[in-house]
Length: 574
Image (cartoon, rainbow, N blue to C red; front, side):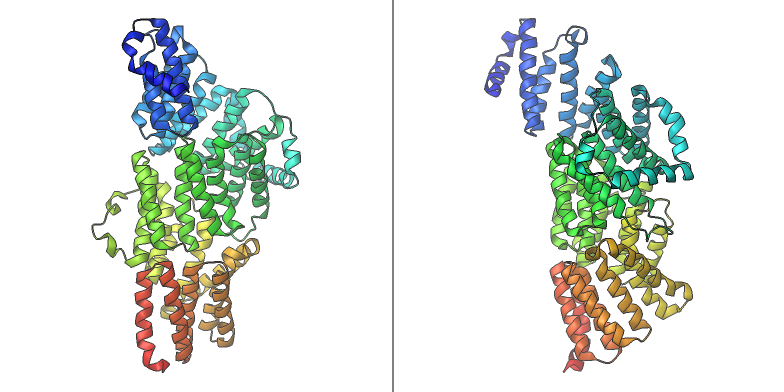
């Protein structure tokens, strides 16, 4: 009922402007309308009402109507940011930071500011701003004294072991029973620690886990809140990432996954609608694929994007969108569908001026187009030149995607080159390391046949060890990969009977786990194996199966390659 009233008042503003008291009353009604629009995720209309409300405030508004001014400027900034008007959002934020009377009144504006910094590829600025706010909220001693100590290897390892053991044994009921401290400052502290943990991954990786430990320390001392859920998820993600170095890659992720599932179960017990997007981005983007089918992760990340956008949380929405395309590409989703989805996401991030997300989607699109038809459909090279020289945050994605492209194009030497660049990077995600070890292992057999060096021979053997360990946590995601690597190794070593059964196992496992692209790959490699041992009829049959799989995947490039093999074998089959 408020909208018709406000609209009518706004149409007759000339009479309202004559009475200051009526201006304030009208501003409050426009605020009410703006709030309702925000609740309905209609940020564009909300921005219109809030802009009108701000225009009705007197010149001394911060002195005479402080609370109204504070609320209006923040909601105006948030709605503008959610609509992609970053300049307007920054303007309102700067007013709040100038006029706000205390840190508690400024924290929401600061939080929006660090989101803007991150979107504009100013992660260092966002990180330093978070540190300043946390210091003002009373965490200065922790940041200056305790966090550096936490980074010490032995002390950190001891703390992680103790926290992990404690959390593994906690039930949802026990966590929920921890008394919640009503102090608003604790909620703000947890909120900023949650964000700085994300930023630290790019700016200062060594403090990610210590920051997560601090969040859990606060949770156990002050009770479970929605930000505690994020602390649990980020702690779990940090533990998974900690196992990304070569010496720890084979370690299990059971404990982090247990803790993460505990965190997700708590979402339904607390008011958490505004962090659903963030929770989904961390759980399904960074953790779940170690234990759950990767295809389902992609679907939940799509829902996380929708949740983030509906709450005006574009940071988590774009994080979900990026990981949706990433995991769906790894999971073998239809390439044409993925291209359409990535184009939609790209249009949204361009509207909001999110530079980093734009570069990520351009990189994914380049890979998808290469897999479809070697990029022939993008003759104009749309977006490729925009990648340019990217910072360290893009290095991992670029090297991984280039290695993936090179593998499917059949360029073994180039694939090896990009894998080495990826492995030499200071920061590489455990999931990327697992996936690339599979493709590197398969591709290495081409080089082994040419060079026959002992160093190359170790690549597939190490990949088998790594992926066997991963398959213990998720047979669905990694079991087929182990079978195919073992099949290729058996074929190379001349153990043909073993190879025959292992290729069959790889094909069945890929089909069962819905990896249509890897099912096609297993059939293709089986075809080459049977061609090598002189069984041309079976070779033709497997190549034909590979062609069908690649067609369903949407790769015209691979279909054409297999069609050439079938033509070569045509006479031999008969």
